[in-house]
Image 1 (spheres, one colour):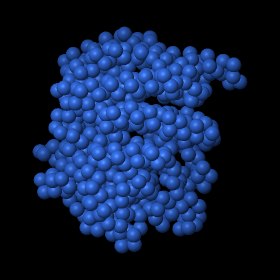
Image 2 (cartoon, rainbow, N blue to C red):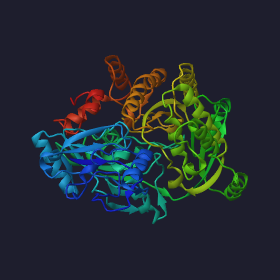
Image 3 (cartoon, rainbow, N blue to C red):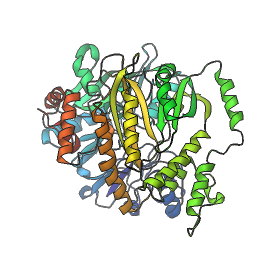
Length: 571
């Protein structure tokens, strides 16, 4: 069996016949000299680091993947696991494809079309809902990662769809350019980055799909199709966030901007201050996000603006103010208190060097589904952020990325909230109702609840689709998976998919909130399915999408159970 996973931050110190790859993506069967005893080892983030250090003497580094293989590959299966470790499938090896060239990709799609063989495109497997998975067949774009052209005159870059965002940023840096925005991390492949409708934050900045100027699709029924807005109009805007259903994206051309530094300011407001100041902050700052800490009167504000003549002095004053300050102390002190009666209590010595994410996971692990315990942890986190206030200046592509934490369940919704010039207030109404419900029902809501904003997208299937000038709000809830205890993980999963997501959907219904495409899970009940299908029909042109699917992919080889359930079949 092959094990293909989106694991991060580790590498063996010693040779153990591991296959290692410089991306989240899966790998081809030609790289087969790997250890069989790794097939059951599936963790991420802190869990990976802990397990690997304990059992296999490994140390953290950047972005690798691990695999395991049995001798008779042809009759075996490939195990595919998404980055957050929440979804896993088995794919017959004969139905798992990796193209070395665009010509090979075209041949694979053509042959699968003739045979009626499912072949769902997969990128870095980053989506929390594993939207790219199909156990009946998949094609990886990991090897299609060329930077084709940087056009400084027209301020665009053309790349193959398997190029990672970080790779694209590195290529642009040599030309004094960068991407207009990022979506928290930069390890997506460009094809998925666009097709999923990824977004960053900035009330006057569209989701990333809106920066696409042309794209090539390898379609099952019509071969290679090149789309652009002048020639293809509505079909172009339908295909930009096509979810991999109209064809496999092989090439993307996107707008770029001059490289620039940003000054980031992190500080904490009360809930009333955050509400009162929001509209001014949205217009004042290029990028802004709120991080609400449930059960506390604390909202972490993170703003990013282009560096100016005042930035250096603000950064210097910030450094002086924080000199000698230990922002991690509230977290360490709580860990020591909670563990003092255990056989192996936490001490200053064994906590030395632990980062924020590790400390938070360790705290939550004591009782992650107990509302009172989570409240205690969240209060310590709020103190951490209050002691972490300050300024920093770094390149935009560094500051627009941030640590998303360890293994986790996440659900994110998007809804309109008026216009950039006149916010309708839906963003604050949503948060007030969500927090009131969380705290009255004592839901163990892990921090943070992240709130971001974007301008509209012209892509018809974007959650932020709307007229020019409209303002859209994105809100994400989270449950971390800090334990590898199967029973506890099942309880966390059940409560997240049930009680917590149901609450977010019920609050969002008033605002016509729809899920981020990479975070929408399969309906959990018949009623949930009916409500979801009604919402999808009200927010998206599903008739046009499914008509296009019927034209480009009449045998539906590019779909999967999740998308067929949510969107219906091609017709």
